[in-house]
Length: 430
Ligand code: GDP
Ligand code: IMO
Ligand code: MG
Image (cartoon, helix red, strand yellow):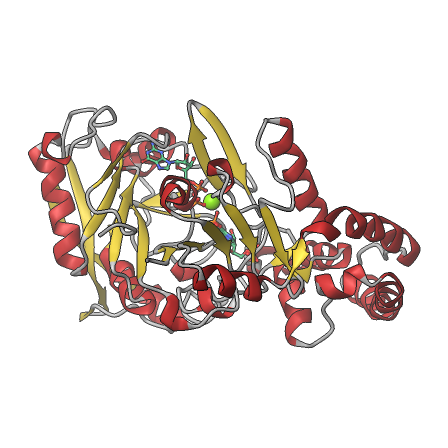
């Protein structure tokens, strides 16, 4: 029996959705454990594309999908996603989707605060997704949050909203110069959401425990990427949750002994949406070419993703922080046609070579990437399904990633479709 965690190793958008959808075939349940609808996970099945923001990417394989206590959930977005999937023939009833009663609810004032703060910060903004993620986690930590338990209790919910909104409106109007919100409107709107979502709400920890006892296999779907982690990322240019594998337990309510493997998803180059440091970022024609060929636009906000060379300093950071047991390399097809490929192997910080990702952003700002150069391959590899059929230079690039990270590559992806993949070692059956 195996329980596997999928983690983004870079700054998000590594292709987690695709790999979770693929591996869901072997799992009984798929669990999201942090983040919210700042995530945008793309699955392409039989040429049809689905982007999920909250519903775990196991839904297309009709596995039981769990939204753990570690998430912040915008009920309007979740209902929209359920309706969208159902209208496309994917069943998302209470048998397929379970929502933790302890997950926190994103309220309209979280979104207002998120956007008004970013506006006020001007050039110093984080570049958030504007979905209210940070303000919701902030209320969770200061114990003013509203969980699904409270949402489902109509009178308690109304009382809470009135008390909280008093303070929020003061802050919105007086400090952020934004529009105040109306309590009655919010209460009516959210009562309707509560009625709709009630059948899905449960004690996810108990359900996971019972299914583990029966020998069922679970797949944990990370959102964002290691370098957006609130503790270990490029703070303050990060998201507001722990995205590393350790949080798979905390954010779903299971113990650490249940986890058997942690797969790090590695895009074959590096991208980042929003602001913050990115040492191997490209500002030249090659960066533009990768951005275009890779269609690097955010799946949530549609923003153009910044592109750069693969950086193994950050990958080694991800290996250590997540205890990675294997890697899945995605978008390898996008690198075809380039004469040479660079891999950043260390940073030169004013003459000192460093291999460990620095915590101080001022130090990081001084860091210049140190590259080694490998030959590229002219071939289009998107039709290849056997590792042995890959061009020699492609295999060389992959081997070098394994050497530099000291971690085996278990999956190679050469296209967005579920079948455009080579599984070298299946983490569920090895
Ligand atoms: P996630 O947030 O980690 O799930 O990743 P996103 O879905 O935001 O972004 C990954 C994008 O790359 C999506 O558009 C996927 O369909 C696409 N994708 C994933 N794997 C591959 C691949 O191997 N090759 C190509 N060309 N596209 C891929
Ligand atoms: P997936 O799961 C890429 C980034 C935002 C911003 C920062 C903080 O699709 O990989 P937030 O709204 O979370 O407060 O924004 O984090 N960010 C992501 N970037 N992929 C994501 O998710 C992201 N989720 C948040 O762009 O820089
Ligand atoms: Mg994404």
